[in-house]
Amino acid sequence: MADMMQFDLVSPERKLASGQVRAVQIPGADGDLTAMPDHAPTITTLRPGILVTEGAEGATRYVVTGGFADITPEATSVLAERAYGADAEGRAALEAILAETRDKAASLSGPEKDAMNKVADDLARTIDTIG
View 1 (tube, helix red, strand yellow):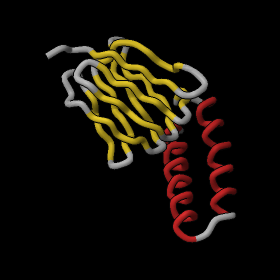
View 2 (spheres, helix red, strand yellow):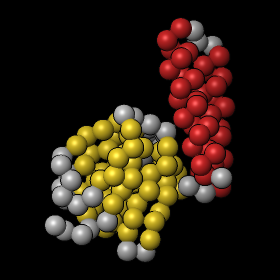
View 3 (spheres, one colour):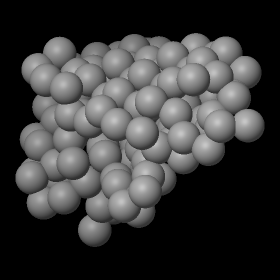
């Protein structure tokens, strides 16, 4: 078993991270999962949350608002709707997205409103996790 794999985190604006890692903790829409070298091929959707990579220099945290993860035995690629470092700048960006999401939810009704409120709740939990 290889001990490292390639990891790439990209959003429409930029490539946020690229390098060798031991593991990637992913906030999957159906539950959190950890991708490691030799992982079975998997594609999953993301929910808003914290993505953590474990590399030679330690753990690095990123915030994602959604997207997809493509996991193969050799690599994990995350295509995020939006991605930020899990720091003060990332927190500020998420707070702005949360305000937009709550405003949009207020104008909706029925299942659409419920879905938008769930996204807002996930964003709020993510902001709390950043600290």
